[in-house]
Length: 367
Image (cartoon, rainbow, N blue to C red; front, side):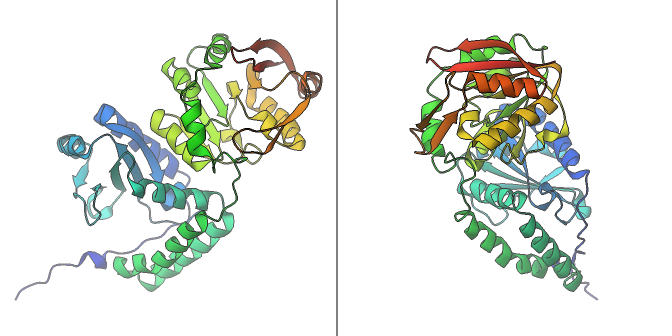
């Protein structure tokens, strides 16, 4: 009697509540992939449901790898096998290389695309939309738990049941408000001009010389990573970046793959629940409303170790002006006010700088 092969759709669907070990599981695999593939892998990012805190998910780490060339990646198949992966080719999506790990238990899925592929933005938009919207997380968790119960032995119908939700979330992305003070909307222009200018780089590196070698730095409003983040990373600093513009954060991750990043506003961020020897916020403070500027002083002071330093830029004089890129109002509270805010939160002015473009910098130190 012929025995029918087991259909792929008959695998058991297991959906678990969010597991706190998932980010660490991803980080371990990210390090292994970047080490094995070298310059071919521009970045590896955590995507899918296990990348969203609080979201119920199948216990499979989904990853997005951006590579220089698919043919070069194909030539590294043996290296991928040594890491435990099975190469599945395009697997139904033109321009992709898909890898699985864990056999029938499926522990990792890796989706590889060449830099600039349109699928990259879709993966990141879906993840970032969920990360910024707890209500969507709750809705998606309930949907997946219900589908797993209904289609426990049918992965195809389980996946199909999620498709409408995914499509709706991606469609809503274009309607989300720009929480990046206009810089998400104008990201392409910002990257074009900022990455062609080294103004301020010498000043930032001069400040960084006073920090412990190889220490952890928090980069607030980190942008695309050029020129500042990349220069600091090249000098051995371990970077943690926060920005509320998804496009800029994606560029930062591509340029500095080992950076730890969060898509959020500085007002909402938890600063990775750790302390740093240095905090950097260049071109950020004066974009914020006055109340958020005051809040930032409190949060940065709490995020610095004793003796830690914060470098931020703002005009020395109190003033208001219209941002040339976004058309929105910017405001400096002025040196007198900033010094007063420092004193209130246990900071003191350590140094001040002026770069070749006439921009003014305050270097505060925690007492």
